[in-house]
Amino acid sequence: MQQYFIELGEGYGDVYELLELLKTNEHRLHRTFIFSSEIEGKQAISLAATFKPANDSNFMPIYICREGIKEDGEKKSKRRLLFEQAAEQSGSEPIPISVKHSSEFADTRLFFQYITGILRLNNLVPPLR
Image (cartoon, rainbow, N blue to C red; front, side, top):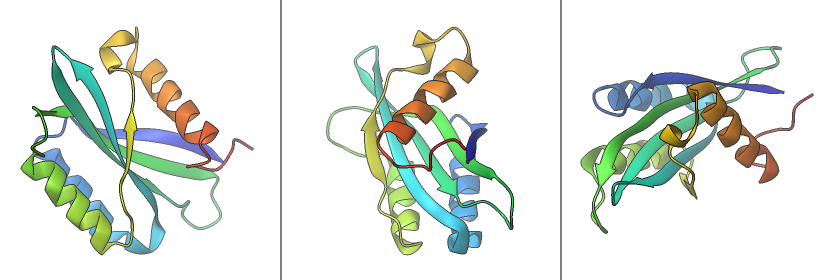
């Protein structure tokens, strides 16, 4: 199974697009994730959702809003709370994962390969076939 990241944006208005994807594709939802990294003393949050392949395809999309949500301390942002609520309504509890910040990679594609590797190693997405 091949997983591909589809970046919706950096977590501002595009979070609402991700919430709509969760609602309208609830029957295809595989898992949801909250990736967190640290930059300049703040948490940068990425919200992501994986969906089962459509029909007989070998393509598993991973929609992501990358690192646009900043959090200080223990207080969660409103967008994160909305995502957690939408995921739970769709039958998925978001899995929190600490990762390196994307700025540590020369290219965004390398960052997405790094995330895919973490997900595969932890059996959170199917292995490559």
